[in-house]
Image (cartoon, rainbow, N blue to C red; front, top):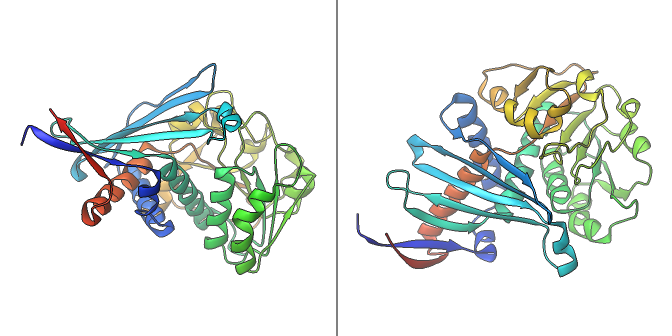
Length: 327
């Protein structure tokens, strides 16, 4: 191997040209498959609170695919006052045979799309096929992408309501998802009362900073499916106490969900991974009255399979900025 090698840098704008919704869906589905079959490894997660926010590292690899890397990411709420994005993420990919870095890429887009894709896969497998009414808590990046994937993958949706943390309408959120909703015959509106919104919905998506229960237990009706996105750190939650105990629980990774997801509040409740469903290792047929919860904490393999695809696309197209990186 030559000693004078190059490191490829892929910034935000370059990353956007390398990844589509369908790409993210396929790569994320493959990550669930690799995880369920034990072909990919996720290493222990770092997730630490800072004075200024939260910082975490998710890492892993797939030996047979020559994939090795990590994502350093977190949430810095003070960035909003600076005109910046609170979520920050950077992904590094390495040559697993030598440890040499191959690529540094903007991880914000990867995180956004792979999490949206994971939520979409959860809806496809767990929500009722006749689901027509969607309720979304949150108006930020993840609320937007979760809504867009729901609209694309659940064509029966006819109404969607959203609730922001401040209780007021969010013109930016409506502008970002309104056209997609209208094109699919789905009416989008702001809701002010969380319990009423949940009671009237078939699908509930929670994508907030996760500081406490967003609605009451009694608001959740039989047949409801919930994608829980926001709880990703010890101490965070969005769902009311007792809900998981009433539900059929599905997770991306059981140990991780019990450490940092909604499952941390019901650690003894049995769960099944979505990957086990997608690979046929586990079976689930929804009954009309089942309440289902998909506790999403995010897999390192999702970041890495998506990033590996982007690296391949960049090599084919000449995208990215190579820099000399002697080793």
